[in-house]
View 1 (cartoon, rainbow, N blue to C red):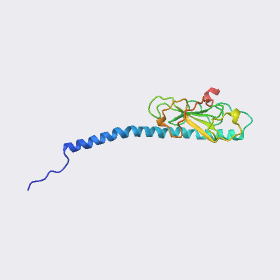
View 2: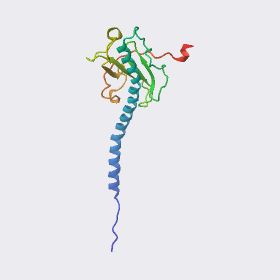
View 3: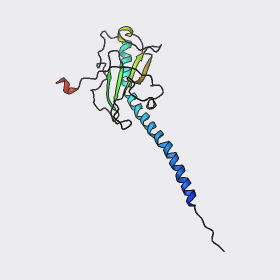
View 4: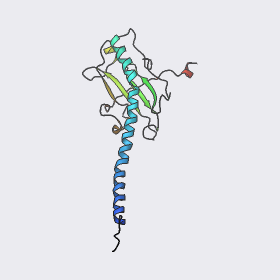
Length: 175
């Protein structure tokens, strides 16, 4: 009786390797984009404390207008709050800017910033002079001055906004 051969031929193995290579060529870039989006969500989350402070200040209409960098939630510039978030700042109208640390999202030097701007129910950006005493109904969210490719942002945070932020005074600057 003749023994029958078992196993895979060289062609079959080459086909499997080719299929794995094609899948990897598609999956790896998608995975890198996915991880970059996840890192960006940390930056958006860092702005949540600021959103509460700005909304409360607008609603209570305190007697004096807050100054840029002095709404009560800001960090010192280049404070290195987390591996992703470098600093959080604000402007005089309550716009929030989250500076993202270089090389933390994609491995490149980026100078990226996410900005959130308080808006009324019609979607218009609020200003302290015109809207103090009003409710913040929504937030305009997006890259500050077109600094971030849209593919790394959540769908609800893709409207380009412009905020010139000031950061909290650094302890070393106070001396």
